[in-house]
Amino acid sequence: MLKNQRTNPEKVVEFLGTFALVFLLILFLPGNSSAKVTGVCSNCHTMHNMQGGSALSNYGADGKPWKGTGPNPALLRGTCLGCHGMGEASKIKTIGSSQIPQVYHTDAADLASGNFRYIETGADDRGHNVVELGNADGVLDGAPGAINQFSHDVCVTDSNLTCAGENGCHGKRVLDAGGGLPALKGAHHGNVDGQLNTADSVSNSYRFLLGVKGLENPTAVATEKWQNVNATSHNEYYGATTPQVLGCSGGETTCHIGGSVQSPNNTISGFCATCHGLFHTLTGAGMDSWEGIGSSTSSPFQRHPTDIVIKDSDEYAVANRTYKAQAPVGRTTVPASAITTATANDVVTCLSCHAAHASNYPDMLRWNYPGDMVAGGGGADGTGCFTCHTEKDNP
Image (cartoon, rainbow, N blue to C red; front, side):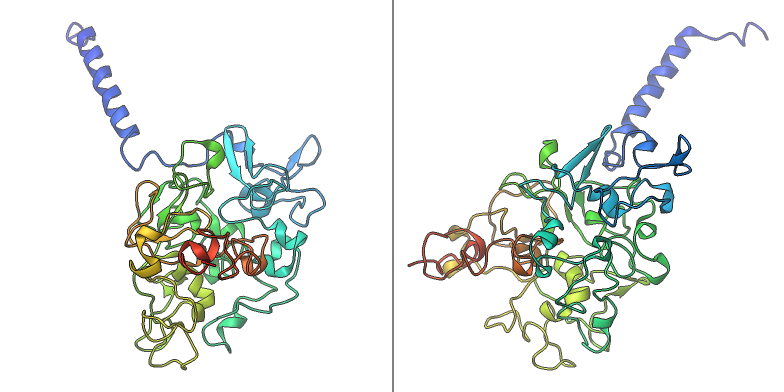
């Protein structure tokens, strides 16, 4: 018995080799290479919000309302803006091995979503006045273009719009999720990066926008992450070929899905439509004639359309268009890498013209309008509106 129980060295080597091979296969399986939060836990968390006999210094810009003193939900060292709006010079903050995109900064260049700082340096019409900024919107009381102006526009207002949660954009948009950090619980640890083609949870949805598909810039250049840099380094936004008839009555498409508010068709424009529905929906049978973009996807439109294919003819022909990161288009399938050219299936999205958070121009536009967009003025070919309307700048 004792002899039989002795370890056979050859068997040990064989077992260890097999184990190592299985481990490597598991480690590099597709889907396991996601960009979850890395680094030591204390980069983001504090156990008791206390160190050395005094309250721990939280992340965030000094003198700003989001600096705070804690404690914060989920044992975090900062709020949403506390971590992502430190107010420093760089648009990407490095703490340990973690890189944190900054939506409030003083860098000359911005992330693809823009920079909340423009609201303070410019005007209220530069962006979404989330309450975390502590800068109430002096222009709007509710979301412009809300479907059913007598109900939906009082759901999200200038006094309750938040970064995340019930009255925000990121995370779970349900009543019991509350606002801010609780709505994002677990999302950073489960984060899936790159091509997001499932979008059935916060973690695997584009930028934690529940239900939205897309490609987060997969560049290997760390300083280009979270940005639309150029034709070879940018995000890809998911779009559809036909906008939906949004509403809450029979025959219309609702955005209340699975107890949460989501994009009905998984597109970024469909997501924006959950608050600004009249700017995106087709005019349906139960709607007034002035609501929506019109009753079809053919021009003339009464509002600029989204989620429709840019026609491949006349001035809009693919041969006349080039891909511009300044005016990004949507794709009808989510690519695995950035597409560098214009294609016959490109679609218009909200983000083709607007920055999600804020921009340095009125109405959150990505370019100076109308200043640099004078039809027939010449000199602006291929920029802004003229990226698609290629002949309108001809003098």
